[in-house]
Amino acid sequence: MIKKIYFITYHYVRPIKNSKYPNLKGLEYKKFVKQLDLLKKKFHILDYDELLNLINKKSLKNDNKDKCILTFDDGYKDNIKYVYPELKKRKISGFFFPTVKSTNMEVLNVNKIQFLLAKERSAKKILNQIYFQLPDSEIKDIKKKEKKFINNHPYDSKNISFIKYLLNIYLGKRREKIINILFKKLVTKNKLSFAKKLYLSKKDLVELHKNKMYIGCHGTSHVHLDQINKKTFEFEINENIKFLKRLKIFRKEWIMCYPFGAYNKSVINFLKKKNCFLGLTVKSGFNVLNKIKKFEIRRIDCNEVEKMFN
Ligand SMILES: [Zn+2]
Image 1 (cartoon, rainbow, N blue to C red):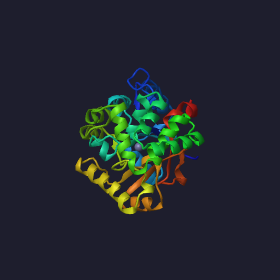
Image 2 (image 1 turned 135 degrees about the horizontal axis):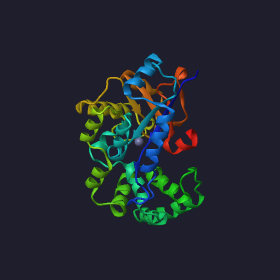
Image 3 (image 1 turned 90 degrees about the horizontal axis):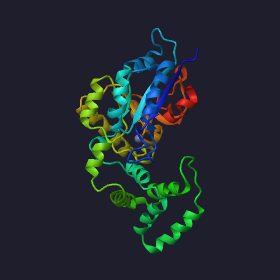
Image 4 (image 1 turned 180 degrees about the vertical axis):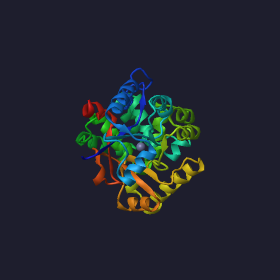
């Protein structure tokens, strides 16, 4: 029998509809609770030790059920506020992947952009704010680009896609500065209190770890590991390990969850050298135990769960 291993990916899990950010892309808390019951019925949900055993010895005792692992990216406060109590109630374990910067209460660029888009519903208004930061001579060119822009993202409108393109790619070195101006203007002036509400603290991580949850690596500053040089990606990973060691929550055999799902061969080689035993991607699908690609683990987004398993 082929044993399938399903990894499920979660980001935000919270009450979204009636919140301050109703456009935030995430999973409604109520839906999450139902999902847990569905997954628990259908699968053997693994904790860290069981997963490690399964990967090393390729079999678990007394169990023919397919396996499932619950993974939570980016270290959001949602994890301890909404996720953890539900897991605890059901005696199941979760795998959490915070970054170092966010745990140190620095708002990541990726989150600044998300909340900009979640708070300001008018994409035109955001675009105008971006243009306002640029010299007149450049705006004509950009507007031409805007007209010709082809949207490749199935979940985003053309305007939103174009904003993401400007902020992530087009602006280049001016990116950080302009994202900060927009975030301050449209979301909040108080970054620290925003971060404290958004991210898990060090104390939260220790609490999760003590209660049989696994805390793994998601890098130091949430960057594409395949787009930086060797020295920089080694720093991203080494600092992450040191950080977990300082908190005394590091497991010798550890799991990397690639930020943006981005990796390459040299990243994988370095991970192997550092005693990492799994690398989680954002490629969609399940994994087959005896053919498992340990550093290219496929995952299923939580929004696909009902479609797949109901
Ligand atoms: Zn992430």
